Length: 455
Ligand code: ADP
Image (tube, rainbow, N blue to C red):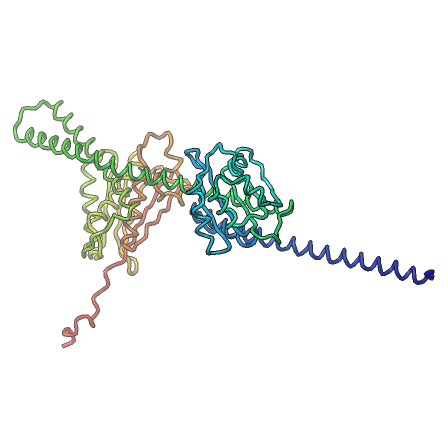
């Protein structure tokens, strides 16, 4: 017979053991939960690090093996409706090749009774905690396939869909080749959370790649179209100028015909300028726009732009303010002429009521600067930061019937940057705008450069 105190002691020991088991279990759960959170945090960081499509998919595979699996594959449903294996990795490097070769030997049909196809069709995950050899025999297509599956190892298996924007874009197959790791519902939940992050990252990378492809196609089209347009345009312009010269030299042409010819030349020149700008844009995109530096006087370039522009104006005046001494720089005269012409043409175009345009050239410290000032429509403050972006036009031009493509300032900035200079703008809507380009001046020759000058 047990005494009452002995019984109480036994009960107490039992309670203590149960409490200890509860402590151990809750500590194990806390550790599992911490590991799970750390794994998901690492997943987010890794997936956020690249927008490259292939790199993102293989980084998902590398996250899964070895933490969650002994080997895994990632299948993606592609635009042509086919399911392709885009990543595969195995914990055992000697079996890596086998897992890579597998889909090539056993291609996956979209409507096949294969688990990956099924998961993609239903959008639901599948979990097989125990995979037996009988199951492998039943699933194998032929003895070679069976041998491959046995070599890779299949003891427990999960397949989770990659869901993005409401549809399954792929599936991750997660396999344990080790009898000590049997997947549970908890593992499936973790795999689904991982697949959720992965699907967003893969979908973003795919959208980014599509956007890049579309941009490249547009640039290619721009380049081809502008080259194709330039050839006939040059011929039209050339022959029109020839006719005009003949008419001037005493050819028979009525006033009306001469005016029409003049208009034809003006419009062809305008078209030519636009085509040249498009060509420049595509050259800039491919890094082919280069500058040919020579020692030049920036003042003289600005003066030439003003002299060429003034005779064509009716409502505007363009005046140059320049220093007494030249502003010598190392620069590409043609390209700087183009940049200053863009600024002066804009000053005129965006002053539809007419008025003065001032071009001021001056030396500021060790920089040569040209400022173009107008009293036109100005630019809204919120548009100033985007003004030099490609194809950007400020909102206040809408409805004013001022044509443009938003290329000129982008070209100006690119040319100025190539010269190691900078371009800036100050403007007030309804009052006017001031654009300034500043380029490094040519360094004064140092007496040390000419030692003979010391004698
Ligand atoms: P475009 O004139 O062909 O639209 P630009 O790249 O030369 O292209 O100019 C981009 C935008 O900057 C213009 O659409 C216009 O909104 C604004 N802008 C440029 N210059 C001026 C100016 N002098 N005054 C007012 N707005 C200007």
